[in-house]
Length: 336
Ligand code: DP6
Image (cartoon, rainbow, N blue to C red; front, side, top):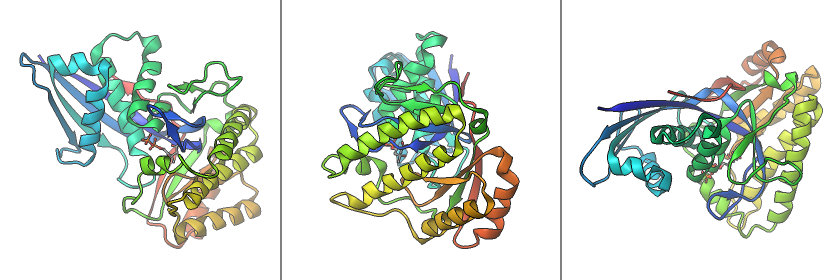
């Protein structure tokens, strides 16, 4: 009899960025992210008992079997010893789909690997509820680093930070005691470029290995994590804005100052950032931006400013925006 498991896990947007890794997908600095609500991956894992010893694993993305992501997923699943029993005894079929379009600045590998890791772990049936998220987070990290943060909402921390007891390089942990100011945080993703990026995040991480500013960058990011932990609990928007924007620009500065330098921002990115600065100054609203490893801009603001910010997006960001995805802080994933 076939057993079917459904895993729905959201993507996340980093506020303090993971950029640079070592060993088996361990981060060179701690990072903090906000888990999204509407941008998620849904995985259906069908497990049918089999008798032969050959591996039977099929992967379909939005109904098609020939997606480039397939190889990465299959390689990942085969590498995890935790999944060996499943691969040996079952014929497996994965059906995956995203709630958001491709190449939009939403990390699809984060939601995909979170959902895959959770579905396989659930199928193994050996994990108690209290251990589930931690184990799934560790396994998801091995697929894509940022995926490990998608198990907690609205914010999570990944990476060992001196003085923060439960923090770990192996898995992410939830951030407790979030101030009301940040619980309703919105993320409007302003799409200026829909084409897939030419340099993958993995290549970007690799360029940190002999980066002349790597040491300072890792220290800076860890300090930003410590400050942001306090900020998220005290509700201080000024500090939130300053850490978040500085992090986004530091990430891109690392790309632009690597030995094999490159630039992912395009004129539309710069135009929007300058418009955000102007709007913030005039409106006095706590709006700010962050960037992923791409040109699209994430506009962050509290729910209370929604009306004014939507007006700003529609009437003052008139050049170069191809589409907008309106997302916000989420509540986490689900599995059944
Ligand atoms: C800029 O998690 O995509 O989004 O571990 O190689 O899969 P891999 O990289 P990935 O890197 C994310 C980089 C980032 C910042 C972040 O999410 O922290």
